[in-house]
Amino acid sequence: MPPPSTVALIDLDGTIVDSARGITSTLAAVLADLGAPVPPPARLLEFVGPPILDGLRDVVGVEGEAAQRVLAAYRSRYRADGAFDAEPYPGVREALTTIGRRVPLAVATSKPETIATRILEHFGLADLFVVIAGASDDESRSRKAEVIERALDLLRAAGVDTARPIMVGDRSHDVEGAAEHGIPTVVAGWGYGAPEEHAGAVAVAATPYDLPSLVLGDADWGRTAS
Image 1 (cartoon, one colour):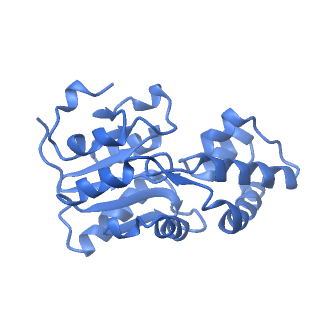
Image 2 (cartoon, one colour):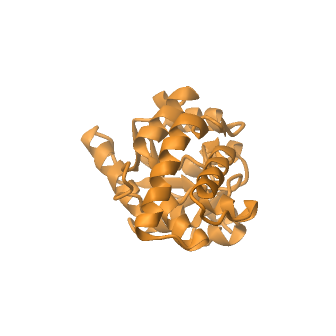
């Protein structure tokens, strides 16, 4: 049985909310407007979760000033039209409420903090979290490890015990970012990550209803890891 966690860090896109439609439609429209190549739908899904600049580089082949122009246009359009084109996954609210009764919760997302906060407030979920940590608006802080570091700093400032944190996320960058801090990750199996992205996680929660026992140390990670 794993030791009990003292705080849970929760990813946003693909873990708390299904936000693919708003992200991919906004990005496709911006790329088309700027004359950049628009990836097919399956590849646009790769933008859901990781930093946008990473996707522009790896999927579209756009970097530097051109990528910054796309990012600026995307942020403006997403804030106005796409941010709320999402919905919480069924069972997530109940799972987070259950976990939050025993350990503090924090959001750790590669989405800018300002937008993440608006989305969580819109869906009535913000009050579940002690802190909401995300990327900076200019994405100078966007790597998952950097976001996790910010979340831990904010939690310590709030007096939260961060001795044994645990991460919950759906993509490989969640697992890898947490690992940089020596933090175990439970994968949200309902999100956007392919099975190969689960490598390195201590467990995979098939549904939100499986999450509390894994996060709280009531289940054996070894029986559910993949």
